[in-house]
Length: 326
Ligand code: HPA
Ligand code: ZN
Image 1 (spheres, rainbow, N blue to C red):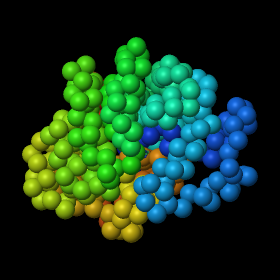
Image 2: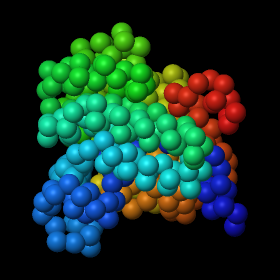
Image 3: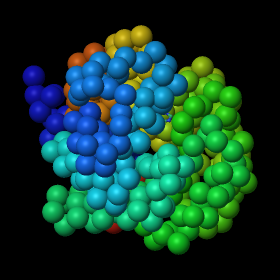
Image 4: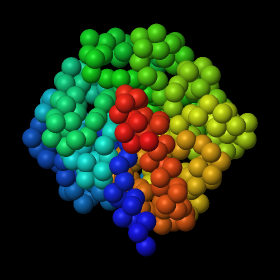
C-alpha cells in the first residue's frame, strides 16, 4: 500500500495551526526553568498525563496555562522554529500560523515581543527550511469586542508582519456577531479574515461568520452538515473548511476517527483541508493527521490529491505561488 508514502511526501499547506498549541511539554518545562516561571506539574510526564480532554473548554484551560511560560522574544522564536522544523519534515511548504496575543499581553508581555519572535522564525524558515510561513492574529472570543479593538490597535504598528485576523477560544455562547465591528475594521484595513465556527457551535455560527463577519474561510466547520442549506452555500462559494481530525477526536467532537465526516465533506464537493490545530496537545502534526484519518476512514489517493489541492486553493499565498502546486 503506497498511500501512506503519498500522504507523507505530497507538498501541502497548513491553514489551521495555533502556534501556542505547538508548545511541547519538554519545551514548556525548559522555558519555565529559563524564565523562572512556576508551573503546577512536577514533570513532563505528569503534564502530558493531564492531556485528557472531554471538550473544547477542558483543553483551553490547560492550553492557556502552558502558554504562561512564554515571556521573551527568544521564547516565541524557539516555539515557532520548533513547529516549522516539524512542518518542513511533513512536507508543509506553506503555513498560515495563528497566534493569540491576548494570552500574552494580559500577562504583561509586549505585543512587539510576541510578533517579533514569531515573525523572525517565519523569516528564517523561508531561507533555511523552504517553508513559506505567515501569521494570522486571533482574537479570543470569550473576551469583549472592546478588548479585541484594543488588541488590534496594539498590533497595527506591526501590520506588515501579519496577513489577517481570526477568532478562536470558547465558541458556544460567543457567536461571531459579537465581533462584527472589529472584523469590519480589519476588512477595511485589507486584512484577510477567518473565524472558528461549527467546531462545537451550531450551523448558525457558520452562517454569521460568513454573512456578518464576511470571513474567507471557516476554521473547523464540521457541524455544517446539520444544515443542508449551509452545505450548499459552502459549496457554491467554495468556502474552505480548515478541518482538524485529531483535534476533533481528542475534544470528543466525534467519538472515533472512523466517525469523522471529512470524507463526506469532500465527497459533497466542499473545499475541506486537513490541519493539526494544536499538535502538541492532540497527538500529531500534519502527516500524523493525514495518516491516521486515512487509515480510519478509507479515503483514497484521489482524496489525498484533493486535500492537497484544496490546501493551496484555500491558502492566502500569492497566486503565482499557489499555481506551482495546484
Ligand atoms: N478551538 C478554539 N480555540 C482554540 C482552538 C480550537 O480548536 N485551539 C486553540 N484555540
Ligand atoms: Zn483551532
